[in-house]
Image (cartoon, rainbow, N blue to C red; front, side):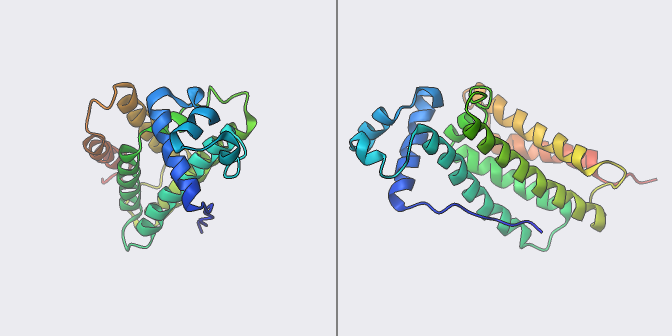
Amino acid sequence: MIYFCKVKFTPRQIEILQAASKLIGKSGPNNVTTKNLAEVMGFTEPALYRHFKSKTDILVSLIEYFKNQLSDGIELVLDKDISGFESIHQLIKFQFSLISKQPAVIMVIFAETSFQYDPVLSEAVLHLNTWLKAIIIDMIRNGMKDGSIRSDVKKEDLATIILGSMRMTVLQWRLSEFAFDLHKRGSDLCTTIKQLVQPVTK
């Protein structure tokens, strides 16, 4: 059973997070400060601190805000009467759609090497990845039961392959400055994954 514990944000906090996302898109997470974020919002820094404790708090909250949105989509997928593999297909489709609408968030999620000396941010990124992997493992387990996914491989390893391919696709999209259609690449990826995981017929 997958539980979705979502962090609640006030409307003002959401405005700040959206503004932070735009700044990150322009200059990267390491160059965003509470000072320039407050300026964008028309706040003083002390006013900003009434909503978030620090820059780290803002970045962690941005990850949680993304996770909230991802949770909404995954819950809709899990409510459908579809196969385990199709659940994974729908998850990939939704996540790529979500990322394409707010590409700056991947600069935070994929900046873990920059956060290696910040245990709070490192833990937030690790928690997101661990949470998503657990959901995919559960989908794989269901797929093995309904026959849409081969059962002669380790669920954990298969989840790592799926997550790794998703990550590489998104990272290439970002590094290429969004040079290709992420939706189309995600669809192609799902086709390849299906060929790899579908049961072997004799």
